[in-house]
Image (cartoon, rainbow, N blue to C red):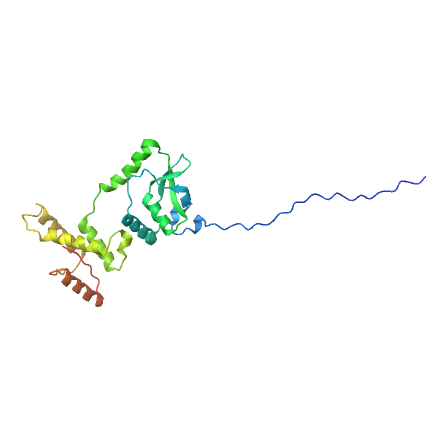
Length: 235
């Protein structure tokens, strides 16, 4: 009896699916957002996910946005914006001017933190943030002195929100107050002036008093040419 022959069967081919390799579109990442201060980069979110507050009571005119833009361009982002959480959109409650300036600069990311405040609390916080700044004021004499120092160092005053004309106006205003007759000045005006002179005399070994601003500037430039360190102050 003849044994049955073994039959060879072909293994069925497993179904295969062809896959196409796709090249992922490169998108900017927060790590490359070097305009954000390094400690803040972990807080970076796509700028398109942030929305300006339609009920913001603070208006940002072109001059204000120009100043913020100049500051961001010079210093980068040094503080995060604040947005409301809990909704579908991240509505900014602090930093609307910064958001507008960042869009102008073409930034793709901003450092931002969420706030759980909602309703009246969120509204009150936004008002308080703006109002508390209004309740402070500059020490004009100290401000003028520091702006003058920056100006003498060829620093761009636009990045700090001032123009050369505003600095000159501030200096003129301080000079006019100093030149006012005693009966028109404040009762403690002489005491304040004396205190300023004492404070400056403690800082510098030599003090040269000039008749006017033109003479002061000419003397300052001469000292610079001679390589001498000096600073301008209005007493």
